[in-house]
Length: 286
Image (cartoon, rainbow, N blue to C red; front, side, top):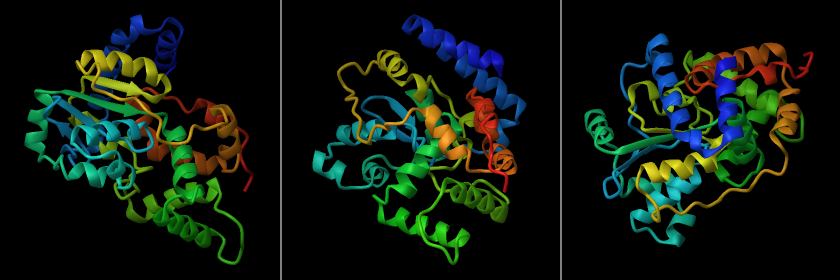
């Protein structure tokens, strides 16, 4: 894992001229890990979330809580939807009106003849984002109910608000009950389940941590200059990652962290992320 982290640091230090080589390394790393992990435990490509723009020969698998807003906006704009429709409808629901789900064979053929990409994010940062945006913000009626249900499960006689520790225990209990990670909500389901990356063919892996540089190079590689509008539809987080790590992961116990890591371990390995900093955070005793 040290080699993985150091190689990514090269990108940060030396900039765009290394972008193409680093993307090749990311793709090669993904292939090697997939071979070692028996395709992440999957035997069939999961096509449910992929979007295929035939007009732009572009295939994208949205990883929720990893930069999807911009790309849903562009795919839906290309589909001819108005700004009002885009802002007042569920992104995926709207997209599916124009981009139907392709079956596995058709999707593989689409990937073979199109430019395909995925955007990934550190698994634990993605969890923090899902917790803040879906369960704490109360911006969405459905997730407000989910948040309340989670709180009541772990605080049956109490009052107050849901905690990150509640959220983590909910994920752990959900996986244990199902004996699988497949049924988790799309905003915190492992990428390995959403996009089955071991069975897909990608031309580019974008990391949210180096998003601006990666997207700039990817747009040129996909010949999308002048066709993509980059925008920030969600609120920009004010607190730095290090503060959020300490704020949330200090609430959980060592055992919870170990189980949580095991749930997302394949994502960590597939995309070269490390959880070392999270394991160093002082944990709750009980």
